[in-house]
Image (cartoon, rainbow, N blue to C red; front, side, top):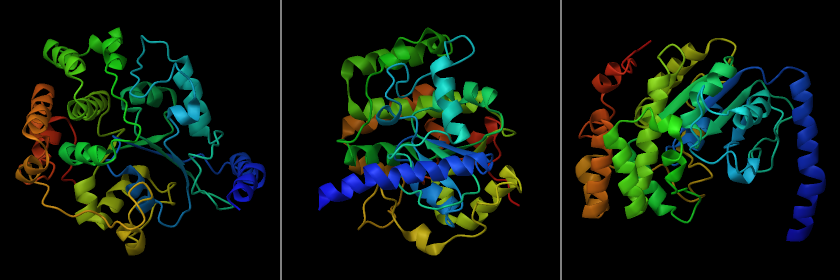
Length: 330
């Protein structure tokens, strides 16, 4: 029976879906692109479902992934800029942002006949976001940030998943190294020698957010914090709609409680949204002493230790210093 189901999916269902996507493309239904960027385990899958609660948009689930692109020139955490060879990544995102790319992995939940836009959800492309936006200025980038201790601990629980740990993707990129100070470079070099999973994931989180916020401004990037959308989802959705504009009418106008309370498919069918204190004291108890100290050190070296308050909430003053007023209320 399982073999028959797989055969039906391969030979009938997914080929039909591709025809549906092509039809929508020809009808101009993928012109409005919301690009949701965040580190893995930040809650991007869940928040995409909250934004797209009415299922009006086609969601592309992590198209920048080795299982999808199968191109050795496109490794996770690739840094691209004006002085690097960007042809491969630009070609890939031409297919992604246009809606031409179709793949079973990225289109798993797309079962509608007609769509009103695209939501592209990415977790490995932060460092190339700027050059991509310059080449595809019609997309609307949205950065999701979650407490790094929560992100890395969640990766620890899913350590058997695909979490790249080769820091050479940074150390062998001269264009990136030219942007980093000596302390950060030294940290990455020593982290490569230590090969500690937790430290490496903290580096991915810090570097991805640091570079992205340096390259963008509040005029062309909207920030969403996992912690804020958990406590005030309607307010955060309203701020998102104001940033996107009226053309992005697929964004939910209010919180769908059923979708909000349902764990995403990358969490598990029988797990609800996790609630915990989220304080530094809480996380210090869950990590080993070495892991916690390594995480704190990474954040301090990057200058991001104060991004979150001791109570686990994002610090508005920190992000205001970077040019993002996260206190803005409608």
